Length: 416
Image (cartoon, rainbow, N blue to C red; front, side, top):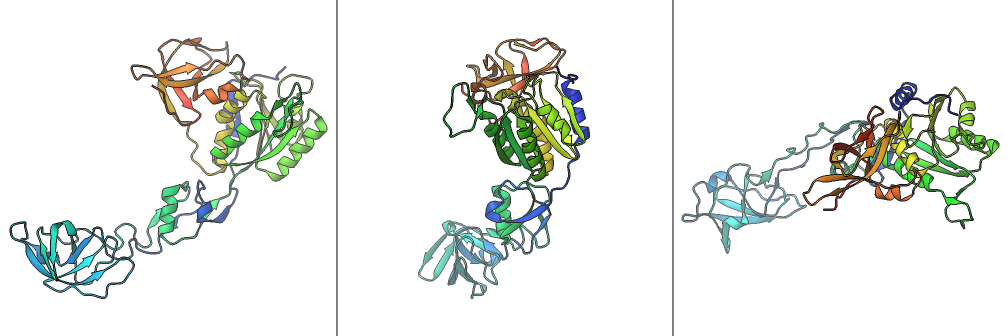
């Protein structure tokens, strides 16, 4: 039997107290490979953006004062003295009574301080008639008005997405300094687990957990290293765990944590180094056999073999650690409010997590509908569930139509 079933809150507290996130280092990578990485330093602009005064419309660069009083009934005439195109330096100076044809994004020529939109003009030969006055700086973007030289444009700890990488590209940077990614070893145990790509013998199942958990690790900002399926053999499992400890920042195993005669994982984790196993069984459903240990500063999560249980416990307990090691924010999973479609019962004395799918009813209410699993290992649960509802130990059930908080496992697009 388990040494002592801890409550969910006790287990989480022990894990948080034991875990000491440490700096994994930084590296410089090319910009096109920097997506979803975390900046390791502030980024300062080395130039003004835009680097010159530019037109924001197609039209004519003018001295604004030369257009004052212009309207549809009394247009003002100016002489067109040249053209400025995108990507070229103006070789023209605008004097009183003159205008220069200009396109969007082109530099404002010397002497001009505004641009009249082409729609507000009429041109015949070299004469331009202006039907609407402009004010100084109208339809222009001043040098440095977006980003000033020396300004902090991105801060340490920001996750680089398409917008942030666009900012770095605007500065002419070809690389970025980012935090190193936490490396997480993933291995599966059990005589019934079969590696993908091989013929499935009778009594075997394919290795679901390694692939679902590895994907969740990537989503959390880590890099999984799949070490394959390890048989229920103490020597083989101990060797695989030692290899993982030597080469990664964290280990996640699945299977071999219950009370069967070949469930060796807790013993082996405890033998690898101090402090060893700190959590051996949690009063939750699903996921009761979960074992958590530490070897020095490296966490070792040994999750149940049931796919739904393993992935759920990963999100609840392992995910926050990967986020911290990756230098990312560690907030709760995104959540939505919904109405329960039916009663959801808790397991006596255990924190219960009910997998649900979300749909909109005919009244456009968001409904949380429990996923029928039959057992915590049902594979379809992984694909069907949008999230889970948490029922505290002291509540017997959630009633029909009761408002619940659904913690999302993925983005949600409801069906009406």
